[in-house]
Image (cartoon, rainbow, N blue to C red; front, side, top):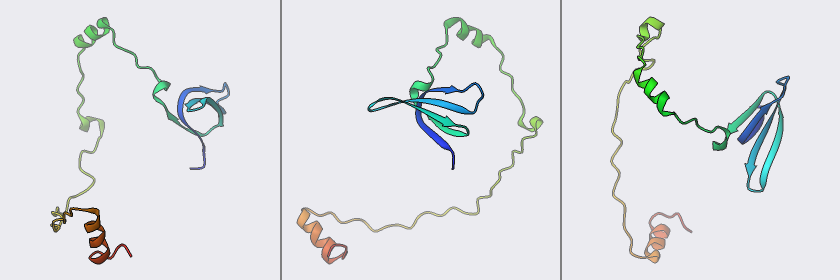
Length: 118
């Protein structure tokens, strides 16, 4: 895509002027720090973000909150499908495979019947 890239980032730090980014990643040989000029593509490792666990008071507050329901049509969303199914066909039936008892039988069939081994 023509951009600089840093993979498996475990820590990302932007410069003050937003012209570059410092990516810290863990490799088999230790920690590696890469300085990338923007624009850059960064993929994240699991260690980049630590999840916040919900506390009991916040869980109780969430139970009391009303869930607002919004009609999609009122937001101007087109609910018509963008495609049309013209037909569905079952795949053609295949012949059953052949079981062989030994490796020699397999090699014989591959050489003589299938002609895929010279």
